[in-house]
Image (cartoon, rainbow, N blue to C red; front, top):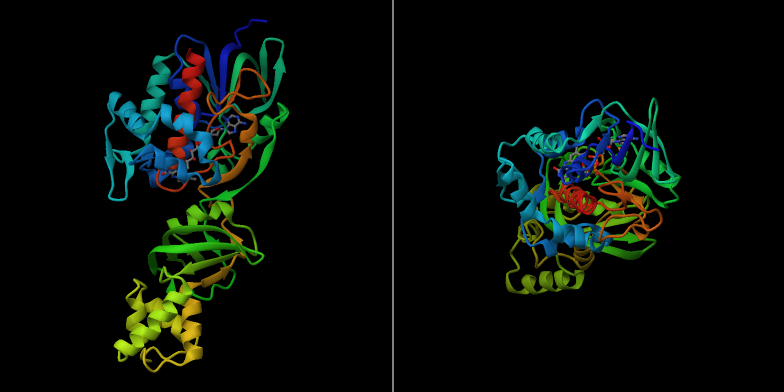
Length: 406
Ligand SMILES: Cc1cc2nc3c(=O)[nH]c(=O)nc-3n(C[C@H](O)[C@H](O)[C@H](O)COP(=O)(O)OP(=O)(O)OC[C@H]3O[C@@H](n4cnc5c(N)ncnc54)[C@H](O)[C@@H]3O)c2cc1C
């Protein structure tokens, strides 16, 4: 059947993944169906409106920034890596700037300019857009797919589901894509908030709000067993813990897990030996000053010593065995039992999503349904903070667009 509503490809979702795919397809009839009244709502608020769209560095390192699922992205990232992404925008008149942490932004510092480039390429490619068009169902047809919004029915040979995850649902990505994937027999790994903070109903260390600790080892324990290690910067907030070290680690968090922060980045027996040895060599050194030497802010050292009942003026020579044991325990394993993590309204990404096992990483095509594709956060992929999520969406979108364009 060929009607005015028949397309070569329908893309559901005008976020970075869907738009980047559309920008790579020429000489085909392409329709983008977007639930919102405008495209790229989440892209526009990304990086606090500056859009940190990728990260500098070797693309091999990128694979390590997506938890256990980085390998799935290998082909996508190699085909359209961070350097190619920067070049892509440069070729369309938008230069980049890289901050001291390696985050890459548009040189204008405006997310709207990243969106502007994508939309102008789409317009040049004569991509059609329908806004305020939430897709409610998808089904296979004899020669492709039937796609229904609340007031129209469309047909296409190919279909790309690029509806994003569930975080910040007000931007439009409210998890619809999971239902659409299930309508086409795809399995969905239960979504949960990622890139989110640790919250406590009565945060014991609220007085430390604003204190930051840098480059500390973190470990996650479940039922007493260590599951994952991580390293990063942590910030105390008035409700709990945040900062990149916590956000990036949060994809693994479950209620009642224990997060331990090693404030000295040393095994406990090494810290114990150091205190004993230093006590013999320079015994007059105060415990507080000794602990500050591990790049632990004074306010945190004092607060912990107070909590465990050790006078901060105690010297390394005079510390009692029991006190030393406590100090070693707390400063190598500052522990928090997870009560709650920030929900989908606060999380910047979604862990879980359409199962990777049923999607071909070389093309992003479904292994179950021919000409069905997935790209972006709708898949069971989530990256660290720093530009890794938008890069993943761009890389996957490019892979799909190039494949379909061919
Ligand atoms: C506050 C915030 C800041 C962020 N900052 C950064 C950053 O600086 N760098 C970074 O790398 N990542 C950042 N992220 C994450 C990043 O924005 C996302 O990972 C990325 O936008 C995902 O792209 P996507 O195209 O897969 O999905 P989305 O951007 O979520 O786009 C999906 C689109 O699909 C549409 N849609 C959903 N359901 C339907 C439907 N049924 N019918 C039609 N359309 C539908 C939605 O309206 C939406 O426009 C941030 C996220 C948040 C919340």
